[in-house]
Image 1 (cartoon, rainbow, N blue to C red):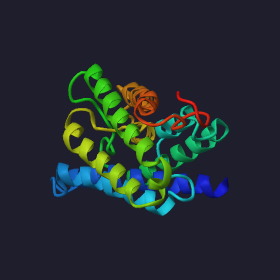
Image 2: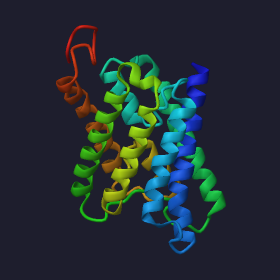
Image 3: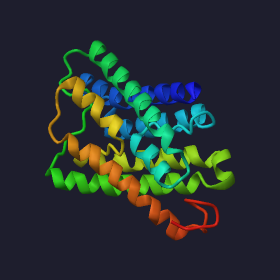
Image 4: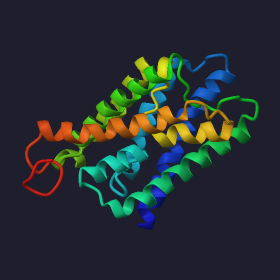
Length: 224
């Protein structure tokens, strides 16, 4: 269990440090990275961490993903608190280091709605639903041991960040949003990025059951 928790800590630290770090550095360098570069950074770091730690902890790096796996009975509820604490610890360590490196940055890559809070909430629900639906499908059977999972999940994250990032931030991950928000002091609309991803990930579980064979989620031989 210790190895799993360390993997989740390091994986989430790397995700937040690289992803939100790309936003911070883009601001500090007058847009040198660009929006497309930020989106690709998020996708590529997730891909890399899946290959690095997927065989140890599953490389969740996301409380919404962890709880959705537990809801789907693919992950024990008893391990959820440890995973979430490790993920949040990794996220806060990354945001804390970015604050030290870039003390003048106002937001540290925090996610804030460009439009209304409800617009971003719905976007976060739908984006995380799509992400979790892909995660559940590519982590079924033999595919989770091949190269499919990392490529598919990283590509979905990059794609969704590419088109939805300018409006809602495309968080899809409570840990990704809460640490820069708390460290930078921008707590406004934080509920959007806590409730939206969790709801979207949970809605993906029955949707996956609807398209997969019985036993996809839940007890073997049964459907959700």
